[in-house]
Each structure stands twice: as structure tokens, then as C-alpha cells.
Length: 418
Image 1: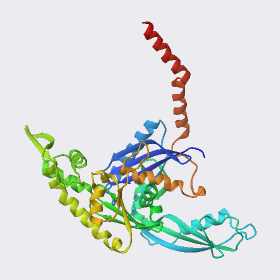
Image 2: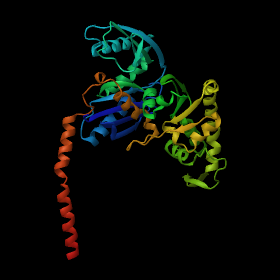
Image 3: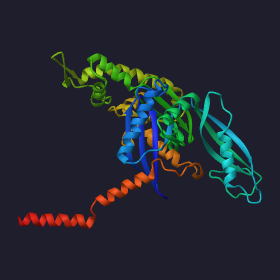
Image 4: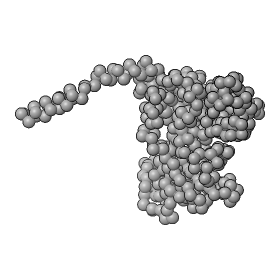
């Protein structure tokens, strides 16, 4: 398999994430990660299109400078806002019965499903073909060359909010970049966390905690069932600290991450932060921080329980938490205590992207890679001529291994002689 360089753009909750990576065989090698703040998008609604475009351009420019190659196209992550799943059975007439089922017949079936009629305010994002049925016999993979007159295709069609999809796509294109394909964020999350495979045994609920919202994704029997949004995020906890201690947002965020410990019952009363206001010194303790944020966190947890309780009561369920806010100490244990169900914290293990805020962006690479070969475009995300020139120039500047060792030995002997 040849090396393939891809780029993913995720317009997330008050942040634009751009990840450039290289697939080589089954390994994903991170080349560059950019995370640029934006005031234009809160995870659900476009607040300022120009602000989003500027953030995308900044991310593209920074990454391109670092790689010394222009980024020309990206995979765009689409929020699962208003996501719905339609199950459909489609009968497809085979073009040539003598030669049997061909690749063209499978492609025709896929495009028919992608062009399915949906609600006016929805857009088809992707199609997951569950199985192919030939003469009553199910196949997981396309049964090429089977000699039949027709084939039945069972598939799940996933749609999302049409207006939002087009708005985000327009922002990327106005920023001067092409869109290679689109990936649903909840499906990308499933690909990175491997939660789809786990859902064959138990109901799986994936919780993604962001700044202004929390996304809950339900998976069962190897399928994405639904995606819901809770209008509460860790940003409310940060704001509460900022108001209580009159601190800026970045300082309040650090206090939350480094001093909030939800796996403890007692908290330190020693000062953890010192600052001055009008030449007057002020301090705060971990206990004071927890007194401010704990009521908000408890309210958030109660809302999660209320939303998930009907599912948990009926079936064996496990939970997974990820997202930018999931690194708060003890959050997984805190949720597990309320739900009385196994809860795992997911942090990506990919070198260069070990950040739960990047879970969805990383999953988009695998979601695209798992598509049928005929659906994937061969054009790389970056300008390969510029990239190869950069690699070539570095190789000419770097000394060979033999020359480098020779220089070290010569330097060592010269030092001893002196």
C-alpha cells in the first residue's frame, strides 16, 4: 500500500481543529496538529461565518508553513445535529446476468442509496451497507461475480441538518480549501474508540464533553442508533470560577483542569493559586474551587442520568467518556458512581495526538480509510510536489550516517589530543 496523506478539518465547539496525517499500511502517523480558537461556532450554530473562515485560514496557513507544502483539500467533520437513521432495502437489477454481479452494480446501488429521498431539511451524510442478499443468502462483502438477476441491499442511511452542513462546507471552501469528503462526528468517534465492535454485546453510550455542550451517542448491535445534545458543558464550570474569583477564562480553565478532583470527598485547604488585584494579594484553595464548581457538575450529571436512565434500565449498558473536558480528574469514576455501570475514559494513543479533544478528528481518518476503495479519491490532501521538494532539500542538508559518525570520532580524538 502506498503512503497516503490526508487532512481533517473539524469545526468544533469554539475551536477549529486541523490534523494532517499519513497512512502507511495500517499505521497513522501524525504530521501536524493545529487547534485555533473561534468565536464563530458553538458546536451547534454558526454565530459568525467570517470568524470561522479566519480560524480555518489560520490553521491551514500554520500547518502549511510547518509542512512547507500547501494543504489543498480536507475531510470535513459534520456535527450529528438532527441526525436520523433510515433503514432501507433496495433491489438492484444486475446489468449482465452472464458475467454476474459487477463492481458497477454495487456502485449503482450505493449511489441510489445516497440519493434517497429524505426530509427537506436533511442531507444524506453517509450510507452504511449492512449486508447483500443473493437468493436469500446474506453476504457481508459485495458478492462480485455471483450470477443472479438481482441483488438486495440492506443499508442504513444517516442524515444530518442540511443548513448546518452547507454552512460549514461553505466556510471551508471560502477559506480556500477543497472538501475531499464529509464524515459524521459520531461515526468518526465510533471509529477511533472501536465502540462499534463493543456494541455487539452491550448497549454503548459515548459521552463527548465539550465547552458549551455534551453529546450523547447511542450504539447497539454494531450500529449508530441516535445522537442527542445536552446544552451543558465544562464552559459553565469555567465561567463559574471566573465570576467567583474575578479571573480570566484561560486562568479559570487551568484551575478547573489542575485542581478539580471528582474522585475525592475531601479537598485541600492550602492555597493553590495566588494573584493580585489593585495591589492586593488574593488566594484560592482547592476546597474553595470545588465549592464553586461541584454544584454545576452535579447538575450536569443528573441531566445525563435522566437522559440515559430509560436505556440503562432495560439493557446491559456500558459508558465511554471523551472530549476536551474529559481530562478533569476522576470524571469517569464520578459518572460511574451515578450510573452504576462500567465507565471508561478514552484518550487517543496515537503519538502526536494524545488529546481526547482530538478523538473525533482522528476517527475521521479511519472512517474514510474504511470506505470502499472506489469511493476514495487518490489525490492527496497536500501539494505533493512542494512536500517532496521539502523532503529532498532536508535530505541534502542532513549529513549521511557514516559522515556523522566520522565527524563525532574526529571530534572526540581531537578533544583527547588537546
